Amino acid sequence: MKKWQTTWRLMALFILTAVFMTGCGEPFLSTLTPAGEVAENQFWIMSLSTIIMVVVVAVVTVIFIYVVWRFRQRSKDEKNIPEQVEGNHRLEIMWTVIPILLLLILAVPVVAATFELANVKPMDDKNRDPGEALVINVRANLYWWEFEYPDHKIITSQDLVVPTDEKVYFSVKASDVKHSFWIPSAGGKIDTNTENVNKFWLTFDSDKVSQAGEYLYGKCAELCGPSHALMDFKVKAVPREEFNQWTEKMKSAKPSPETALEQQGEKLFEEKSCIGCHAVSPADERPEEVRTAPNMGNFGERTRVAGILPHDDENIKKWLEDPEKYKPGNLMTGKYPKLSGEEIEALTAYMNGLKVE
Ligand code: CUA
Image (cartoon, rainbow, N blue to C red; front, side):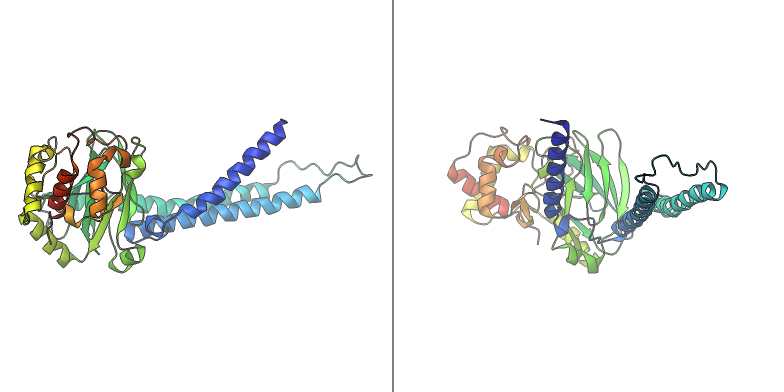
């Protein structure tokens, strides 16, 4: 095949893929529907830089086409060489000053925003009032998220609950490999590392979060393994008052299996050593090295099973039966003997009964 044919085939494939991919966006997973100060700030800078780039490309293209056309070689006039100009002060000053101005227009808001977004002083203040500067410790794991509220001494997994209309400070790290914490419509992303803690803040506007969807979606944004794309979490942003009530309930939540089936499930949860990794109450005071699996404290209220499947009995059963099928490379596979249908039934009933509200 000729070289130009290969080039054009690749080009066509690229254009097709690009057009196809534009259909992949979801409104709740988009930086284009900002739902907080950080996301709005970042969206504004993105728009500004895009506008500047488009204007520059358009102007340069127009001048280029004009010059190519104006000074083209005309037939019967091949010998005529246009006037050769060397040095033109006015032009040179122009094409030096304009880029400098454009860079300044871009640099000033970017630098200002960088410092503003990196200001986490309130979270390090020893006399911090948790009612004013809420801190959440985020720990990323293969392939699940842990959210610890150190002021309230509670832990939850997969579903992050935050108050609206105030700065929420995040202290993020990872316990195995490098991941990245990203809530597209609220801002970010920020790397979660194993060797250091990163800090930043986000806000969640009450009037905008609902437009982004019932929940905001969070993602892992760093390739971390076979189930990287499935390492999702949900963000529920609620008014401060509701948030306070939630933390109070979480503090005292304990499993209270009611039916015989739930009680049987509780027994199995211990016998099959699920309890060795999964805590069943949000007030888990064990050190983090021991917390090797998601806290199940309010599992019955989660929106997704394993962060990805719609939360219903069917999916919980499917997950218990063969987690590997739904999240390849997860650390739960092989940790427990094969469960019978009856055992799965009982475990599902018990786990769905773990509720706070
Ligand atoms: Cu964790 Cu990608």
